[in-house]
Image (cartoon, rainbow, N blue to C red; front, side, top):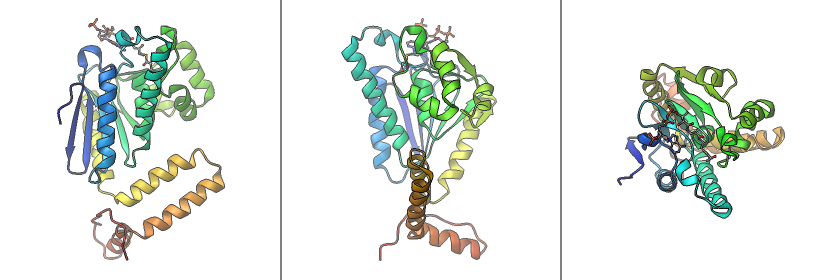
Length: 264
Ligand code: CAA
């Protein structure tokens, strides 16, 4: 299906999604938000996809936040709906059972940083810029940024960024733990796809289990999180993937995972 604001492609187990409004630095219009939400449902329903990579169109931006031309016209109730719709969509992204890599290729501001934060990890080009500048618009982040940033980098650093609206470059974002890898701009996509393909070659059952246990466990106490891990470990053992992985190791060959549970 063709989208107006997003390029979405699936190649074997790898899905790529490019925010595509380069003239507005890929800002999140209401239309883009709807298309993003629709595509996330499509991804969730497609069992062949094992990994998703996100990026922005053009050389300047990943996503420069919510579209301010639209935002400026909202009344309080419409703003509440917009924020709720954005949060539903970004929660959907975070809750995808497959791993998601954000390849941040320039400005990731406001909603752009919020999308990246809801991904599983971030690779950034060395010209990437992160920030939650909503305070400068007389607003606060509305797509989960106040919550996810403080959980990821700590309350004090998140407060400083949110209160000042300051933008940080990729190397600082890496130092404070937001970004896993910083690449030259022309190597970013290659590096993200290389990692995505490594992930796509792993067992679908164990990938889903690992993501679910990490995401759910982080909001639980350690004992409960470890219990979740035990249950998920057992579930993995009931998969063809675990049989294949362990037997391939013993036979000294590479595993070929099919992502199936045993049905006996
Ligand atoms: N919404 C709408 N249009 C945007 C935009 C946005 N968020 N960001 C950039 N654009 C547009 C500009 O208006 C400009 O359009 P024209 O060529 O038609 O004038 C074009 O993209 C290029 O931008 P600039 O000329 O401003 O480029 P620059 O290099 O001088 O600056 C920038 C780049 C620092 C990213 C600057 O554009 C900027 O500060 N953008 C706004 C960032 C922002 O405040 N984001 C937060 C939005 S609110 C939000 O996201 C709330 C939420 O939680 C969901």
